Length: 235
Ligand code: IPE
Ligand code: IPE
Ligand code: MG
View (cartoon, rainbow, N blue to C red):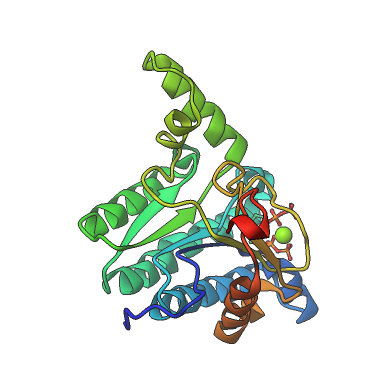
C-alpha cells in the first residue's frame, strides 16, 4: 500500500453503507446477495482509502436498530461475518491496519464475539492506520454509556471526559461522513464524534459505490470550507 497522502484527503472518513437490500431487489436477487456484494465492496473501499492516504476509516455495518430485522436476514448477516468478514479484514489488516469493532458486541452471537476478539487481538500492535467496524452500534447508547462511566469514575462530566470513553477514544473525529443509498440521515451514527464532520450523500446503492465514487467524495470534500464556527476571515 502506498503511504503518500494526497491533498484534501480526509484523515478520518466514516461510511454509512446503505442500500444493499434495494440493490439486490432491483436485480431480483435476495437481500442476502446485496449484503454479500456490499461486504466485498467494503473491503475494496477500505483498501482504496488507505492507498490514497486515509488514516482512519469507520464503516457502519449493523446498527442496534438493525438487530430488530427478521431473524432470517440477521442470520444471513451473521453468516457473512463468520465466513467472509474475518478473511477479508485479515487481508486488509495484514498491511498494517488496526481493527476495532465498535458497538454493543455483547448483543451478538457468542461465536462472533470470539471472532471479533481474535481479529482485534491480531492487529492490536499496528499504529498509524485503523479501521472501526460498527456492529450492533448505536450512537445514543454509546454516549449514555460513556457518561455513566465518567460519573462512576467520580470524574467531572466534561466533553473531553465523555470523548475519552467513547468507542473511538484516542482517534480523531471523522472529517467526512459518507452515506450511500439515497437517504439523507445519520441513523444513530457517530452523533457525538460527527459534530463537525462534512456530510456527503450518494444516490448510489452501496454495492455499486466504486473507488472512483470515493475519489469523487474526497474531491468534493476538498472543495468545502470547514469553518468550525469561525468567519472566513478568521481562517
Ligand atoms: C445496509 O443496507 C446494510 C445494513 C443495514 C446491514 P440495507 O440492508 O439497509 O439496504 P436497504 O436500505 O434495505 O436497501
Ligand atoms: C443504517 O442503515 C445502518 C447501516 C447502514 C448499517 P438503515 O437502512 O438501517 O437506516 P434507516 O433505517 O433507513 O434509517
Ligand atoms: Mg437501509
